[in-house]
Length: 424
Image 1 (spheres, rainbow, N blue to C red):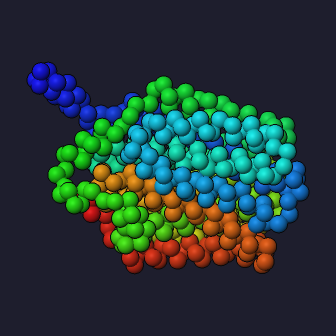
Image 2 (cartoon, one colour):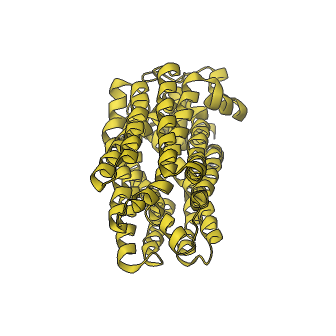
Image 3 (spheres, one colour):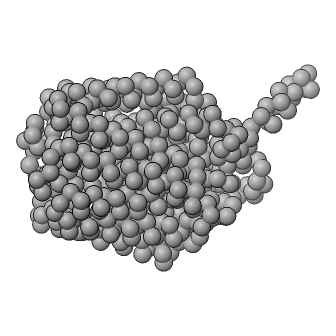
């Protein structure tokens, strides 16, 4: 009986292989799923500030940006629990749950009778994004293994943020042609339903790949096993590499939160049409998305540290160029720089966590990092909104540029190179 019971184990183990080529079908499917996740955010990037001002007559910048604060806080907290849940109940269950929560979002945005309904929609969107995007990241890390981790994260983030750009552009055009609501949000219904069906019917669980990687590296038990408290403290504060990564992620999304909420208002004040604002809202994530095809793989060759530090400085230069400009071409050049800098940073931060965190607690560490990173949305929206109300739009944008530059200095001084390290 014992031989019969052991036979299946001997057959299953060799079928698990790490690497992009060995897992091409599932990896490609997850790229498509993450594109749909990104498209759900893109629904809001061009037109929600305009809805706040034109339909609900909200004037204060901090109030307009309240939807980003709600989204950022909820997504950040959900990221943390998504990492823990994906270890406890499996990656696929978390992914499908995230899509189920996304289904009501476009309907709420279409028919919201008050701004509080918009905020409620962003609570659901934040939960959904935290579950779905975190899980696709974790699953791709599981499948890719250590050799091509930067490329894997570049492909993941390319799909997500290219879709953000295309969705932002599409909603801008639809809104210009048919009005701010409800037509632009019809796209969201399609995104949510397709994402749910693909995740439920075709995506397969990847926890076996994580266990396979952990087994192949005979790491001592005291290193492989960490409590949630230890993972949180190390990723947030104690480990000089992980904590440098976390602060850079927070500041990166701090300036993205500002760009999401204030740039459409800044461009409108310069006299730009809704179509042109839609183009600018698309250029930044488009460059960010496409650039990651190259920067993720580049980090596998040249290392992580200086791509991260340099990327933060390029972002700061892009923000400065936007605030100094008054015409579309200047805004577009600044948005291109901002996207390029973000492309240098985004997949590299995730790849660096994969370098350091052991497979046994990697999902939890990714969750903690994404907690801090997406709190940046809320911090950025609050900081930019309050500063804009007190000192004006220009002052708010300059402040965010300075904070972004300082974050790159922290990485340069504190972080060590992680490429080629095996869990430590």
